[in-house]
Image 1 (tube, helix red, strand yellow):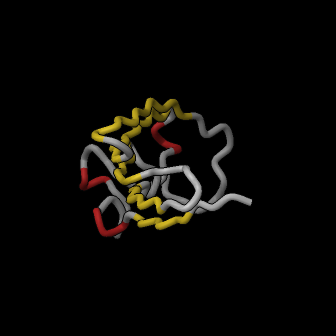
Image 2: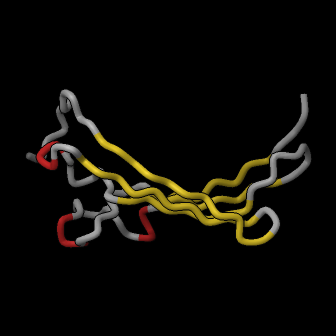
Length: 98
């Protein structure tokens, strides 16, 4: 049932993978399984995905896109304004040493 209240004993299992395409460029994806489907809210995803460039060395920039927003295997069961590419987020970070 759709609700903004806390769901007790909300249990999921997930399986994720991050794959280096070339150099520091990568793609990632995670799939989720809900043991009690009635506790899955419209914004809870069936899967998430992302891609980007990651470099941890000082003086470098990292650029990442990730989408955690209500992605569903069946798009008609997604919450309103969720699960679209535009609902993802972009992160730009700079690494430096202390």
